[in-house]
Length: 560
Ligand SMILES: O=P(O)(O)OC[C@H]1O[C@@H](O)[C@@H](O)[C@@H](O)[C@@H]1O
Image (cartoon, rainbow, N blue to C red; front, side, top):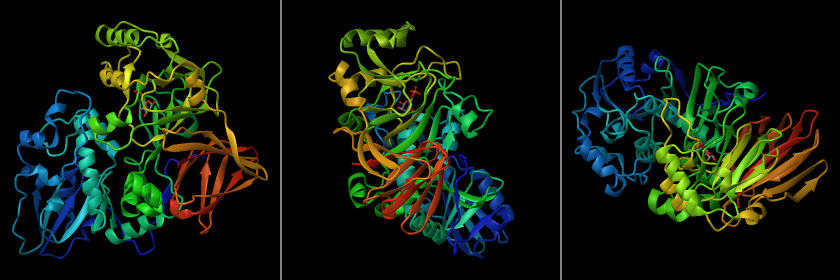
């Protein structure tokens, strides 16, 4: 059965500590300065108050957020002037956190007890001990979307998602990854009344072990105006949610790995720490060389069962992604159809007879005057046959229609949906969603049309390898896309051999009950229907054993 909380035990020497009084007992007897760094979304008030109250030694506090440079300075340093007029995007920030300060405070070391310096950037203050107090990014996104979250360096004002995604996160990610090799403690602050602490060496030892064995990240779903209900009904996600729309199976920059023993004794650690600390083991040397510490493939679900059509959109072409948005590789996508109805469809690519000027005019009229359009006048549709893979290179207009479950296997960037048309529907706040159609039109691929779309982007599977009761098929590959999608088809009880060949694999059970992944090192990992698993490059040889009475399909993606 699909697990909502895949969890891995820490390595034996790791000290896992839960609850404020136990965490406070870890404080040094003093005198010492403890810096606690982390993102703005951590509940810093609770942290400072609860730690001080539970501490056996006197605690003096310094809230670093009161020492940032004036807001206009922070803005000027982090955002390019040419981007300020763009309400949707800006170039990713490459600033260090020092840029938040005119001068980093230099407090006197304490004569007794603990000086607790806390807040984003706290590690920049001279300290004796360093902790990182984290909450997963989904907390920041929902707080900012709900109007009570703040942006990095701007604690006094309501935050924006634009700053959060394109300025705060890149700055915080780099900062956190640089601290990971030397933090003395990791504090999970998801439950401000019940924190969980891992000692730094234990955290690193556990990450080292996880970067060498199959590992599954914690899944979750958001809600959108097009979201459906498959993941609520079939996978057990929150039945009270408005809907289940985009399912975060493995979106590496936001994914977390649960380390611990149970719900009250677990820390959710960014998957990205595995990439930052052990890139060669996780990604493989060649992939690391090409993508740095970015895990380049993502798996997510798009659930529109009893929901609506996605917006019709495209993604930035590679040069635009690099020059305009500042990210080195772009958002090529594929849709693997997991569930579909008899008449459901996928919108993909321009019709042979599409008139781009007319398309532009209709997109503009819809956006500015609310005039409805029919995307099918310009864009092809294909039946959403289960098991079919659609390739969606950057620039290709596309959308999944209502009534489908798409397993989206894509390049990792995912925050650049350049929407053309959103069916004139409101968001949950009653307002239309952002329509960055000028960016979309600037990136629209107009060369591949009609028959070429069907020929290039809807390929017939080709058998690559086979054995007793199983075969592996290539479902789709394209010169312009850096990864490919394959499927291992196993008869009931069959066992297929595989090898990472020094590049990570990502697996998903797309049909059948499940599989067991057995590695040459002797690790076993269960993988149930709909679950997604990363097999690090360092695993080398492994086997897939089909579970259950029915045939099993395991979809696999790898860098080419
Ligand atoms: O723009 P909406 O309709 O929300 O759809 C957005 C989704 O579309 C898919 O094709 C992908 O590009 C996803 O990464 C994206 O989140």
